[in-house]
Length: 217
Image (cartoon, rainbow, N blue to C red; front, side, top):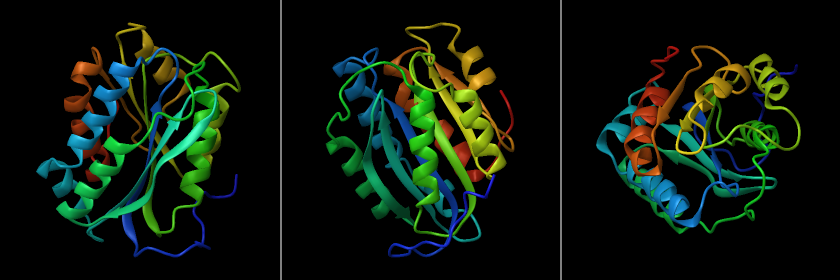
């Protein structure tokens, strides 16, 4: 496959160490209280000094981040943002916490979500050293195209897909993520018991992704 790296045609950002798509499950298995815990947890992560230090600690001193909500449809919750300091992280946190729940809840169309995430990676307005999709969800794919072939396309195009499996609905979800979702250099999956634990887990995951200290767990 042709590389996902591109020459940006939109207004360009300065180069970054990492282009990161946060691909967030908003399917019907995620109720509204769980959705609030998830987006608020993500928002708090971008206020965490450890996350900001990881985002700014590379040779280029910055990362680019966007957020995608996915179910049977997909919607860009936060467009591409460059994080080069605490103020940038605060703006991303505010945007995440204000994002409406779109698209409407539906089935867990994980493969379709990955396709949308790869499209966003290809549209990143910054030249990036690394390309990563960060998938989080609480269920295995049950609608639309299978995620495994999409994962393989991502890997052949130079991207890494990592996962955060929320185990409150499906205790064996880690196995599905390992087999059909994650891939690429140093790809890994982490877990958390439920959405109450999401904020702590996603913070650790972001630090690991931004630092590039990968390794399967």
